[in-house]
Length: 85
Image (cartoon, rainbow, N blue to C red):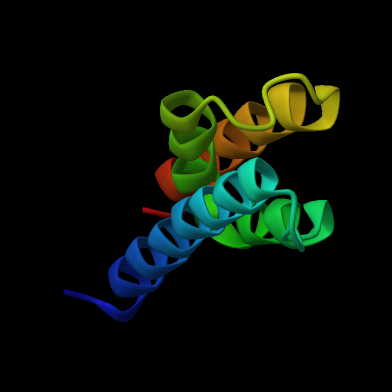
């Protein structure tokens, strides 16, 4: 496994876990993961993991910046992977 493959795996798992933690905290009405942190994890390459978390956990699906932004980031990141390959 190359460094970049490992990085992408880790950042996507991290984004998914951040989404799960935020959802659990929302249910308990306690401290939440900041939206900036969630979006930053997506921007750093974890858009697939965050999108998966949004769909599976049904989390942040009413927020326009997530519903529009995360899939857009994923498309851009996939295009960059294709171009740079």
